[in-house]
Image 1 (cartoon, one colour):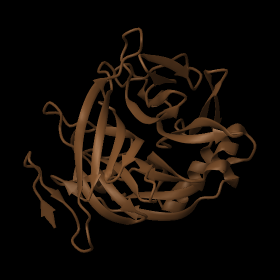
Image 2 (cartoon, one colour; image 1 turned 135 degrees about the horizontal axis):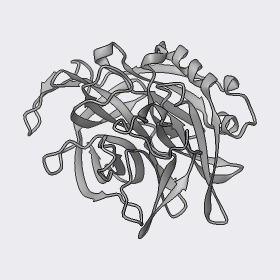
Image 3 (tube, helix red, strand yellow; image 1 turned 90 degrees about the vertical axis):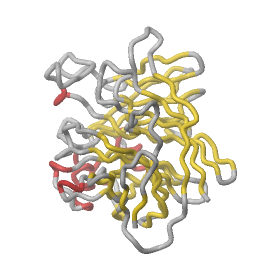
Length: 327
């Protein structure tokens, strides 16, 4: 089964099964900059915090707190060998914490944001909790390496292809997503982890090895121009289904960047892929959506905030207002 989008790129999906249509519209685009004018870099996750949104940067030790009329830095990790930002051109990319997941959470009943590293190297296995104390964000972090090893084992993913880039909260559970790479024979997949256990592991109340990892499943999203679509993030809908963001990025492994030929939203119900719809290009550019957050649902319309990683530290990350109509 195949269809040809307006730009001529050919997206292929496996035949068989009912596919519910999804239509995606970009309602707005904004460049994310801190109050001092410097760009928000490599935005990779977004979740609500207080009266705004916390945006994770995968190549920095601080996040961006985007509030009405203001974007401020929030330190989430200490400097790494004296560095707070990381880039291939500076020879420091291998040091970056690579925080990719931003998920709503609670700490002792108070709202918080859970940030998780990708696990693609031994330096990228930390978890962070950000919460507000007297209206100011505070962070606590922990090494979760033993948990990442268990997730990889449950999914059957070798350590050099592990790349946990997305997460959605479904009630008391986090569904944690492996970003696949079809060129390397690694499918997109996910597991379920109890949110409370994840929070306790970051706070040091329990060991990472004690966190249950269950219900692995694969997600076959198809391909564009021969490049497989792979999960970059996810949000849960009120009816229990999820919307996944996906990118067709031509890269041989879980560390190196490559050209992105298309991005898409996928509507899924557990392992069942109900529909895949391309995210329209804006200004002739493919925006690599790496973070999704749910704003509201109005009947069949789902309103989302998405953040974009342009793989360029000098380019401000874009924030997209997306609208998905689920027919």
